[in-house]
Length: 85
Image (cartoon, rainbow, N blue to C red; front, top):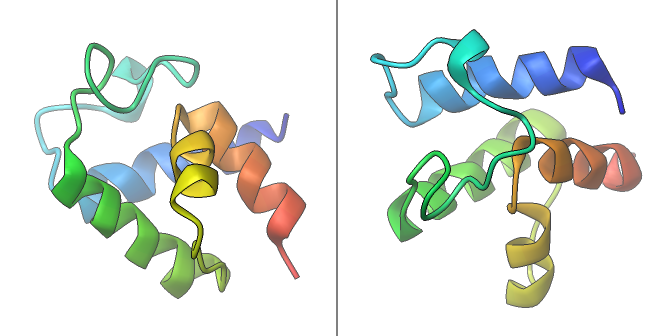
């Protein structure tokens, strides 16, 4: 796993989702993004999709693929790495 990408994603998610009360160090890269983990919701998912398109040029058009990619920071990093141009 690319540790630099994981750390970059933590910072980007904090900025994109206005999670000012959380520091990158407090985010467990393996924890779920939705539900019990970071506690994100469907609006946050849309913000993550926008972030992926804007920062990485990656579009998620398949809902199942998006759900799989957005399980955790680690899965998001792996998705970006495997779909980067």
